[in-house]
Image (tube, rainbow, N blue to C red):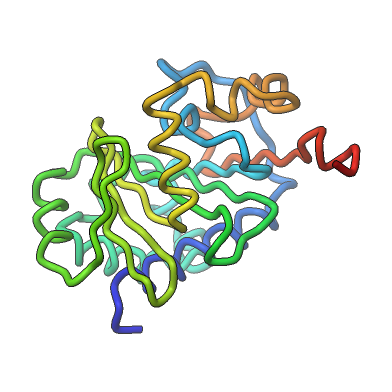
Length: 208
């Protein structure tokens, strides 16, 4: 695919599908200051996975399974070296279509200003949302943005705006919503290469 946004979103969905099939991977509870990128996942998400990218990208089997070379190339297009990414959090809602909730949060030591310059040089439609700029591709519904912290967001517009909502109002985070309030106490945020959690919100269980 020639379009950068479509290319990145395709990679993200591929990662999400792979990770959501790995629910059997064990999880351990490790406290992390502020909850990391996981604390930014919006409440409408029903599945969440975290990759310790430093470990995943150094493992040949994981690299092959997650097509890490392709992801590294996509990151390079944004002036990010794959080795500069330390954590990737992927989340999904019930609806994973372009109009639904599928997104990824990238954290690391990259230069956010260089990433912004790369985004600004592209022919994306720009939208301001709560003080952040979304770079959107209307052809496939994908958007990219940078948080105040410098974390990179990639996903559907609903997903990217959802993360920005949480940054503005941390009380709207998934981590504060049942059943994730209990589940995420055991969700791995430490040295585990891949961690995964999935739960159906009560309103879906009750058929509302």
